[in-house]
Length: 310
Image 1: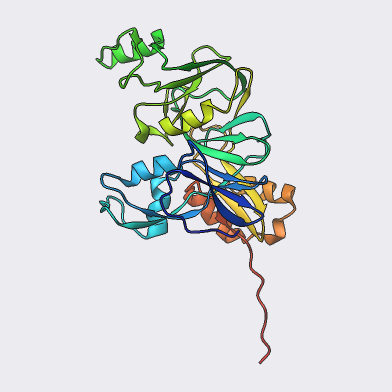
Image 2: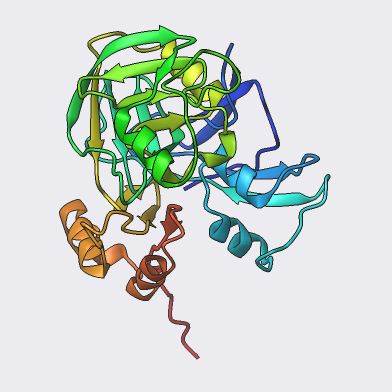
C-alpha cells in the first residue's frame, strides 16, 4: 500500500483514491478522521510533531493508535517522556470491516473505531467503548434521538456503582464542561445506550465506558451533522481483520477485550482463504502480528525471491 508521511493538519482530511493521496480542506474536519475511497483501509502513515503537553496516550487517543504501536514504530522505551517539537512516526492504518456499508454506522468494538460510509469515502473515527464488566451491546440499533447540549440523567445503576465506590453523583448533570456526554448525543434504540462526546478526550480509544460509544468532541460534532434519526447503527466484534490492498496483504489484530472471540492465527488463515490470498501471506510475519496485537494494519505480504545463478 502506498502511504504518505503526514504532518499535523488540523483542518484537513486525507482522501486516498487509487493509491494517490490528496488533501481536501473540509469545514469541521478533524485530524482524527481519516478517509479512504474503496473498501480496504482507512488511515495512513504520518509524521507527528509533538505539541506542548502531549503524551503518547493523548496522541494515540486522538489518532486511533495504541501506545505500544507508537513505542514500537519509534523504537522508544515505555515511560518515555515526550518533548515538544519531537518527531514521531504514527501509523494509524486500519482495515475496514466487511460489514461496513453506505448509510450505516458500524462500530467494531475490539477495533475501537466507528466507520461512516457516505457512499464516496469511508471515515474511521476512534472511539471509547464499554468496559469488560459493562460491555457495549453487539447488535443493530437505530438512532432515535439527536440532542445538542444534552442533560445527563444519571442511570440508577451508575449512581449505585458510584455509591459503592464512595463517590456522590447528582441524579442529573446539566449541559456544560462537567457533563460527561459532551455537547452532542445520539440516542440509540436500546435504553440508555448512545453515541456521544466527552469532557475527557484522553479516554478515547479505550474500553472504559458504561456501554456507550464515546467520541472526541470534534469527531462527534463532525458525525452529528452527517447522520439523521433513523440511521442504522451496527456494533460488531472482529478483533482480527485482513484485506488485500493494492500490492499488499494487510493484517490487523486487537486484544479480545470481552473474551468472546480470541481471533488467533486460525482466524487469519480463514480470512486469507476467504479472500483468496493464502499463498500471498508471509505466515511467520502474520503470527508476529497476531502475537503483538498492536491494532494496526501491518503488511504481511510474502515477497517473491529471485534466485541468481552463479
